[in-house]
Every structure is written in structure tokens, then in C-alpha cells.
Length: 148
Image (tube, rainbow, N blue to C red; front, side, top):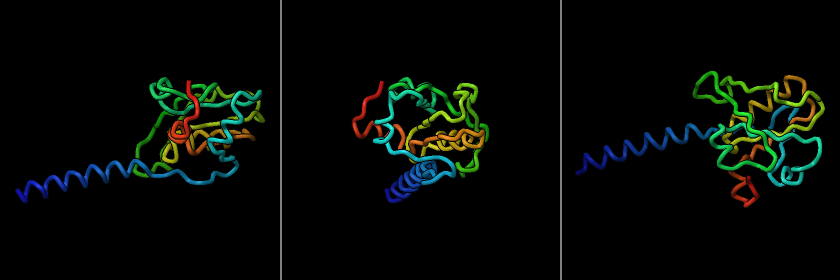
């Protein structure tokens, strides 16, 4: 019985450690990118000249997204333990041609690296008004804000 408990404890520890490894939080700042709270983004929705992109998989977008958000899934090209150094891509042709347009990116939340990398790549491509909703869809929904 004791050996069974030790095995169960070991298995639990392995699964917990693996789950926690996937939850590496994103940085709290990003050069040249404005980080906006869910409340700030909520007030921007529907304003003319603002583009909002959901970087999650299309399946998650379909489960609910911010009003007016366009699905623009970010795809990982490399794997690795450190999400900051992973490489990925998205269809930048879907971004507005105007490099001064206000563009908002979001994904799952503080551990949502897809929106972080999308904002970073967009800023590096010369866009001037890149906004990153770091809190993500998890915080949006936890506050009871509407999704479509």
C-alpha cells in the first residue's frame, strides 16, 4: 500500500510539474508596444480605426471571442521549454496596410505567448500603434465581459 502511495505521489508530481511548465508568464513589458488592460480594450471596442486580432487557434476563437475580433491564429514553428525564444508566424497580410493603425492583439492570458510574439513581430514590421491585451481572453471572460 505504501509503495502504491509513493507511485501515485510521483505521478501527481510529474503531471503538476509538466502543467506548470506550460504556464510560464509573458513579460510585463514589450518595447514599442502598449500593454492595455481588459477594461481599456473594452472601451476601445467598436471605435473606428481599431483592429483587434485573436491569436488563438480557430477552435478557441469559435468558442467565444471579443466583439469585432478577427481570428488570426499564430502558429508555432519551433518548440522549446522557453516560450520567449520560440519562433512562430501568422498571416501578416491580414494586418491593415496603414502602419499607424491601432492594432490590438490578445490570446489566452498572461501565459499566452502567441499574442506576445504577434505584437513583437508587428512592431518589428514597423507598425507604430501596437497594443497587447496581456490579460487575455481568460481575464476578459472572468470579468463577465461579452463575447460573441
